[in-house]
Length: 295
Image (cartoon, rainbow, N blue to C red; front, side, top):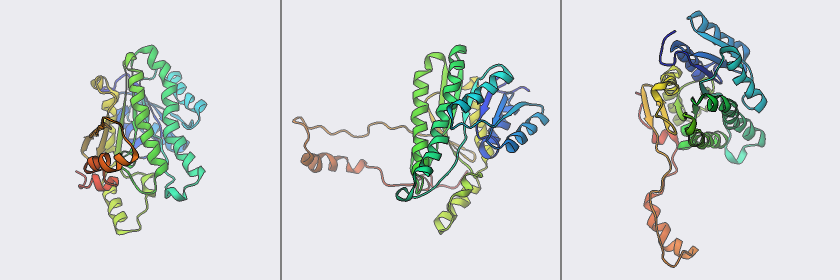
């Protein structure tokens, strides 16, 4: 099959449903051979069957991204089946929503293990191949729950912000090998986001907006970032929301205050904090900032 990623081999984790499925199908339709990774053998194989029926190439894999040795098996599946690896899409995810002061150790660890450790594990397993061939692309899924904020998702938000830092470090460390790393914060209604509470009128309105955003809309941006057309794009944070693509800012100093004799807690309270106060960020959530209807 011809397309923008023709001849490339892509790994898509969590590809049995939702956003991951859309990405796997789009990668194959654009010419890539795809490792469809999902812990559900049935879901993963169904996506593989769909790709093959459409004339594409794919293989299913059920290794767990949360364990280092298992994640290495995902990359091994790509190399053993298709002879190489060119694109890693870290999409696998889970939710264990709970207010911070009620969250337990298991709820914290389960989300960190899949999102953050999983992204590291699969990326690290692919790194030797990317270095040797002096090419490769990582695409990681972050979230506005981390970039902006949300209630009841301290585990998820921390993991997603950790992924932003991981992606930037990969971009810096591996730029000498022509390896790129970028993040996407997707807006989409999926099996994972269907667990978001919808009890209050505000929550119901948010869910109704999410339901308008198709998971497949995220895929074109992922395929582009995996292609040679994006060779100069690295270290960036994008967002996809229905037919809209956004580029996110990254933390930079916005105000500075100086006192020649040095600061004391009292002078900070009297001078520094009041001088910076107008630049403080409000305690906002993702729906407060991205508050327009999906386009």
